[in-house]
Length: 207
Image 1: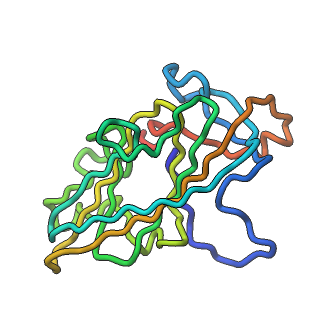
Image 2: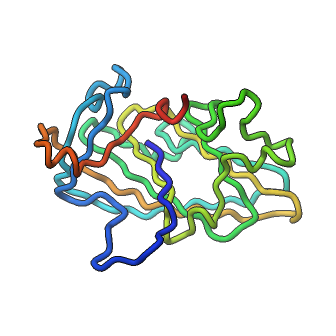
């Protein structure tokens, strides 16, 4: 449910769309929980899409952070779907800034860490604050390479936006494109399964 696209090594013609299109297939692994049974282990065809841009911006002082909840919780940004037939594919890019972005799901659980117990992002550390953090070079504004996949009732994804030392204040602008995808469940042929985008549950990012 979290994907970072690599920097392109070559240009192809015609270009390959970053976002899901009508007629594309998606498959959710069987590692999705029973509480999200409407997608667990199932495959779908995208019947229609709608792209909605949305910018969020914050002014944050040096060595401070802002936690941004993207879910539909009371304090969230309401960027999750509200029915079981919709998938949100959300791309995010940042305008140039002296900032870092860490991801949590659920709250308090880092998405990006290493296996050794102490190798987790730590803002109080001069080195570990950079572990697993994304910046505006990794995923630029207008050319998003960081993607999230949200379904109804998924646990909240938290973006922690942190301003590094060296300046008094920084303005962080996060540019989102929410690709609303209406899904219909299908049984895929082997050829279709080979073309299907696989959407993994967040626990599959940690082992």
